[in-house]
Image (cartoon, helix red, strand yellow):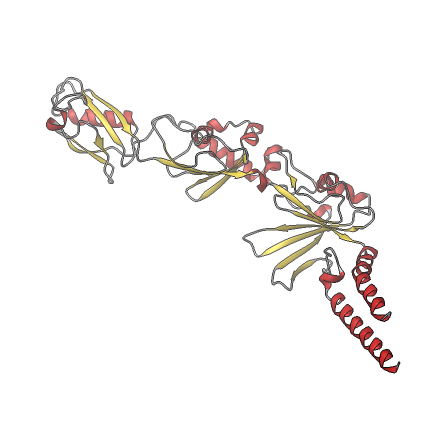
Length: 381
């Protein structure tokens, strides 16, 4: 009998040890996340090495609205830069000859100098009958005048320059010039378009809208209101609908040699909700923007049984920078609802609501119930 009691006591002790070991870890006790011990405000470095900046949300520290809000309001540096971009495109009416372009030049009164392409002996009589290539220094080689500058000039300007040179040798010089092969000026387009790649800029100027059309248009996953134009290392964030709201058409912004255009995906503009919400799912940011209040509403509100409305957090990571902002607000106070309605979300924001202390305790109890049942079974042996 004593042996059985000792055995039963040993089994019970072992079971208790196992239960304590299983429940001592934070991840086992808590079925969900929790904010943990965050400082009330200021910067701190977490255990994972990341630097955070904690800010209680107030009217004084509302973060700036995202770019699309500046467009809607018609103010801000981004708006001014876009207008500067469109104003800089005015007057782009003539293509400028570039290196590697091929020119067709005919002298109507002197067919022996520039035989037409359909002449049977064109290649024998004139090696340039198929066209005059612009070399890497920007010159072409033309009969009588030799090397003559072409790159950087419009077709009209080059024609006048060539006519002036030929007047020293010909009585009726009237060169007919056109670009037959556009190889010098190019732009690039990628992202969520049907035909990404490299495209030539022909004699007619190509607008931003035309460039997207040349690439087959945006895909169903593409966001035509989130376009990045990169020119000489400077990025311009544009949106076709935003431009219309500003009174600027995408057809008024012309591309230049070396420009690149990137169409972002629709799923880039999402907000993620975690914690004690009525429904957990990513939310799209519409064209008109999304506020913290709208996030809560579209997530079917805070869970009335488990959420701690005094601990609502917005985690905003800045990517390339070395810190992440964490804003928090107490939504148990009615006046803070108006504040949350002014807080506009940015793409990839994370909204998190902490569970109540009772919720965490209930989850702890639920996590140890299987272990307590096991102890009773051991004890009954």
